[in-house]
Image (cartoon, rainbow, N blue to C red; front, side, top):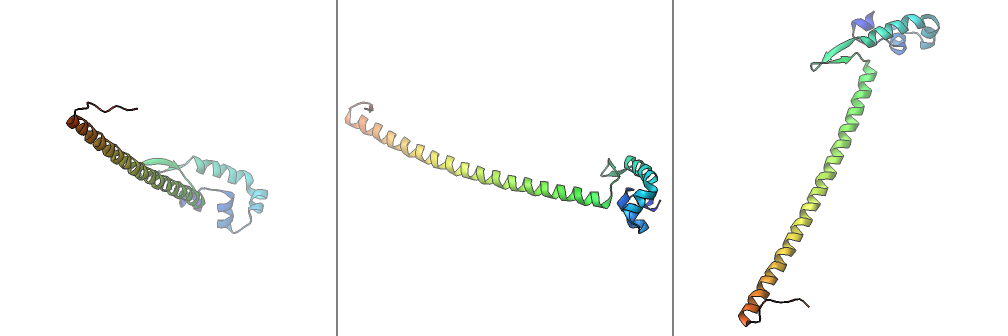
Length: 125
């Protein structure tokens, strides 16, 4: 009952630790009782940040926290990659805008030169 009072899930591992006996001893002698307690505690919930969540053992919380940490690191890495890709695309777009402006200026200058000489619009070919 101490495990339930401290809001820990009842598992063979947690009972063995609390009772300072081996899990094998518990499996051999108290399998049904611990199984029933385990089922009851798994159905219990607690409120975290306004949400009902199943009661978990400290080990389960550590695993969940590690999974979230890994996911966060992966998402941060993906975000860094996306930002680098965007910066590269912005540089490429700026370079292409510069080239377009350069060719526009050449075309404008050529068109002005043709008008001054009276030869009309330039033609390709």
